[in-house]
Length: 265
Image (cartoon, rainbow, N blue to C red; front, side, top):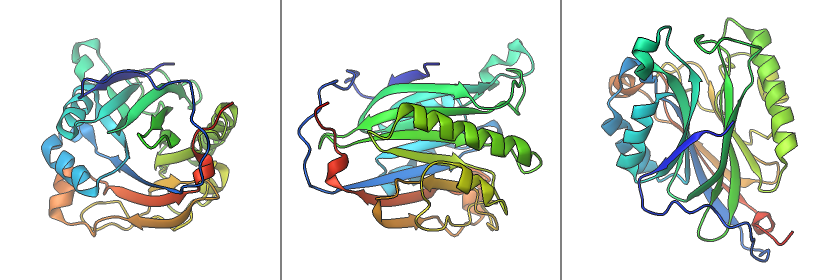
């Protein structure tokens, strides 16, 4: 399925299908993942300020409503794509539909999403999707970003099945541009999830939940094996962070070799 997209800037042109010559210049990237618990009505302005301070190339958001995503992208002056995860129990409260979003100050193209849960109804909060999009920078480097929110702690079997479906999805799309798999994996004390998903966690994820005093590492960014100079960061957590969400933002900075820039087919 194609996700809904928007932009807070005037340039909505798709990325060119033509790719430049390959170079040897390494490329530094910053990816931020955050479950913002949109149903609790967080202060989108505060979330935008926190994201802006970290200067990400790509932001992946879980548990965000459509209007919240549009407001956040506008505040950040970023292009974005929002994908519907599940609808509320009644159509009278359509505005409570929950989804996921990819945001970037760069070009965003080839966006889409697919269900990875096992036949959950559209109005069930247990329905799960994987969202993806191609991010391209002015320096001609590219990433294929994947945004996940896997099943919760009480449903380990579904979570593992979803992780395997994501592995199949990433394999079907390919590794050029290089894939980065990120999001809320709900994998506390379950190393099988990281093992099942594509990509490598070069540095252990920091504690990110609950945000006031985190004790669980649930939020991850998995990188290509050849990524290097990887740095991972999350705030310490306190009442101010808890007022924004029950999760902390996790920021991962890394370098990819220049050979993974776009090249002629």
